[in-house]
Amino acid sequence: ETFKFGGFDSPTLLEDFLSDSDVCDLLNRFLGAGEPSKLFFYCDKSGAGSSTSRRLHVTPKLNRDVASQHGACFYVLRKDPNWEVDLGEMEKELICGEIRSSALTTFTLLLTEAYKPLIEANKDWGNCSSEDVSQFLQNLEKFVGLLSEMSAVQESRRRVLELPRVPALSPASIGGSSIPSIIVDLEGVVSDWITTIDRFLTDALEDRSVDPTSLPLNEVKKWKNRLILLTSIVEQVKSKDCSSVITVLVAAKSKTLKKWKIVDAHLTRAYIDAKDKGRFLEGLQLHFEDLAICGDPDHVIKVVLPGIAANIIHPAAISYMKSGYLGVLLAKVTNSLVLVCLRAVKSA
Image (tube, rainbow, N blue to C red; front, side):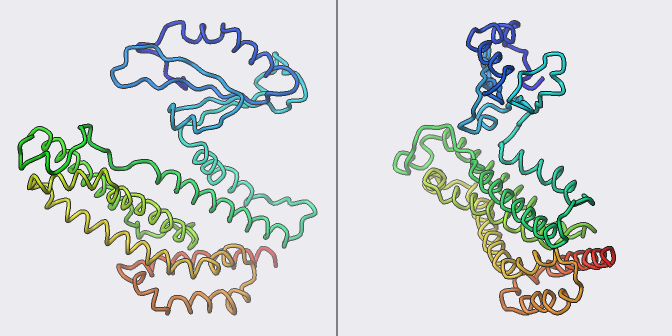
């Protein structure tokens, strides 16, 4: 089910794989005591129009991002590597799952959507003091934020703008429209760039509806991720490959360039805007982190809120006040204030 066997794959692909002597030896060692305690299965990607059967692979170690290169990865982990696996209770002693994108992205999502809410909802902390719990939750929040940033950086490295599948060209080799078919292909590529950038700019526009559970740190995270994405797109637009395509179309006097210049200007403005907003939010991040874990309304009134107010009246906040973003931010600060009061009431 993970690798969707079928099509041109051999009907005995799985049986041939499991009957291989090296694979059998690795599986037997995995089920016995000691190492390896984990196995990763992955399959060759089927190329477009390919009529050849794919191959399965298994390895106890991953030195590369197999999921992004092969599309999916199936893993099996042992709960206790010190003992042999009881074949009658394999479902209790083995843990398995899929990684269908970057391993970092998958782990970040699992930690954010599953483990973090469960930990925060935990009521029994044993002998830990309230200060210890608060410090742990603060460190967990920072760790999740760091993973999210790393995941966003990794995602931004993938090429957003597809390059043309034509031989390398220079303006001198074009001569107006002497190669009309290639010019048409390049115009199609640039049109795809325009559509892609428009989609990213539209998707990145903030939804100004305020989620009752949304906190100001979420606003910081969103603008950081937006800046990372826009930086990646700007770097791709300025790359030698993209610049060569535009230069050729300029020499060919293509009409597509008119739309391209408009989208390029929108991209530049969006990039500068995201950078300004990110700079403003950086000055507030420490106050937002304090607000996220604080359970003392007195501390919030005397320290946190004055710090937020001082940054809001700073000149750097001007770009953030446009288009109603400041109202969204203050609404999220209000959400945090409600949570502070609830924590104070519960601990009273």
